[in-house]
Length: 185
Image 1 (cartoon, rainbow, N blue to C red):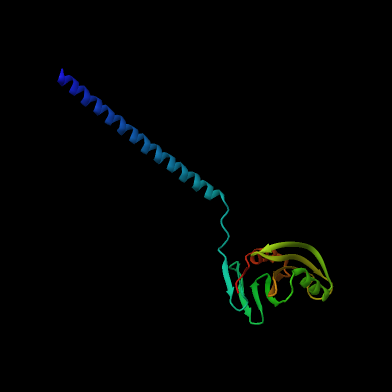
Image 2 (cartoon, rainbow, N blue to C red):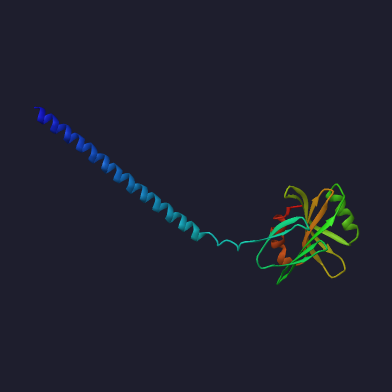
């Protein structure tokens, strides 16, 4: 009788090990099936998404106290008179640093506008790098420029940074460049 009980225990133990083995095989199989499904999904998703824009370049100037990103098709021309020009086959994006001891951006814009015959077609107040800024579409009467888009970024009691272009084809690039501005004294 003892032999029968020992045989039954061995048989039960063998069955338990076989069941554990089968469960492990099933778990490993399901794991690989689920993982391959995720890879297929991510590959399909990657194929359906538009290709990313070319990586941006970074411009930094200790002299001007700024950093910004710009598309690689631009060439940078620096002037040590507080200006940077981003040259593109379609035109130019200009960046100027103007010293200011004013306490708000509106006072600067009132003075700026008083020296020009200008119509503001669109204006947005915003924050760039935590600083007050204004984005404007400007129309000029007389002179070589009819219309321009400009960002005025105000660093209180320090400077006004002006990012602008008069080429409508560069307005989207200007938006991207100006919004990447970082004050870096």
